[in-house]
Image (cartoon, rainbow, N blue to C red; front, side):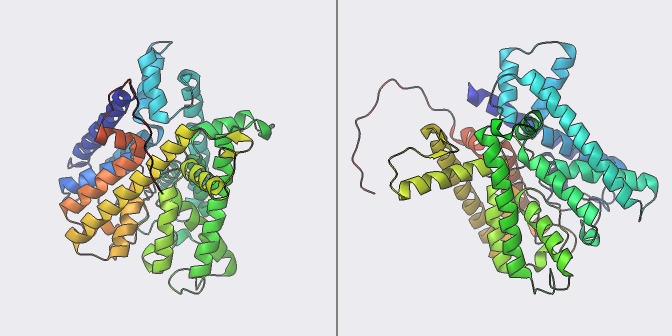
Length: 441
């Protein structure tokens, strides 16, 4: 049954991406020549809330084109299944069981009580994006006329909360690297979007009783804090004296931009410094953060914090020879959850390494930059070492290379487990067990 819903969601994303690409290809949506592969890449990047670009969003698209991209970002962030269910809720009071199951699969919800949950999601999304847009519009008024500032504020707020990383500024946010309010606003929008709808709603409903938080929410909160601060420390230690990144910045701005870099390396594609100027060691370690990603049911991709946390906890219990099953916060972790986490991490690693190998052999470009781009696409992160100008490194790929990146973005947005299910299909039900075999490891 699950396979049917995963297949429907996958086909839905494919349909939206191709529809978006066709619309973006219309003369009223772009300026100058736009190859269909580039329109398809842009539509996939927006729908999968990634942020990699092979054509300038502000320079090569009209206002209508920018609006189409923003619409795709919102659809991809909330999930198109959510919008379908919202439509159903407007025309009828109750959902049937198939609609509830499809919704549960799409948003990775813990229960089938999706109607009320979805209304809360919609309210949270609109409220958070509205607050972000107001703050950013006010900041952009210093450099732009009101209507331009308003559009930039709305666009960047929606792009940030949905962890898309699309920007209407050709240098992303490098010209705002000293603007504390803009950097922190976008940074916290990215964090909120990456926590996941389930976590946001649970925090709101139990804000006075943190002990009521589920294990999932606790892992997400602790994991997010640890990853952000460990990323800050790592990148500051490596880049502190690099004149092309943090070296020329005052102490406070080094901290501010290290925070922003750490946040965006896991989930979103904004940058306030030149990513291409980072040392190779920073690029390598950043792939670990991008692979980890953010939370289940969030606007971000990657293997997810909870998946990595479960496996780390399991490894710890096995290595110390504990006679207890792996547990956290006085709760046992089920074996089937551990198995699923193991599958996600192994399949993710294989997919990234295979895609990197194919691109290294076909594109004749530097290995570390290809690896970085592949992981950024799979994690739906969107940061890139660049093409030497304002576009992503993917701009240097041929049509085949761009197609590989598109597939990786779809896999990251759909989810590793779901994408794997699409590839290998559903196993037939069997009613027997083989005898246990002895294997030495």
